[in-house]
Image (cartoon, rainbow, N blue to C red; front, side):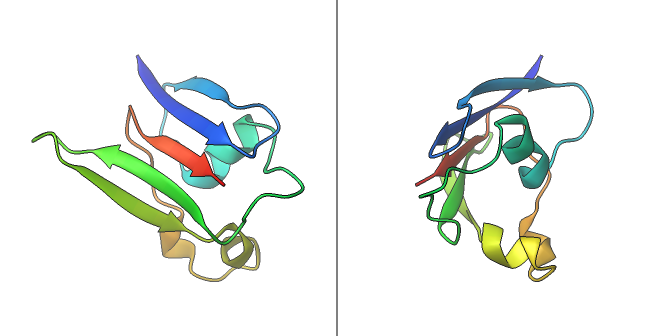
Length: 85
């Protein structure tokens, strides 16, 4: 099945399965939200491409919650890791 990993300063880090499309905000919600001392502007999504290379996508939680930079709220792919420092 499809799984994403949410690690770091969230209330319930772990592996979350999904069957329908899942975006970053939804994954953070599944993880119980970000922690009180999280670096909300410096969240990263780690994604491994089919050729094995890894890339990092930036996610500014503070901006997205204010309705700005919504293009950062990407759909996650199975295997993505959301890192909340």
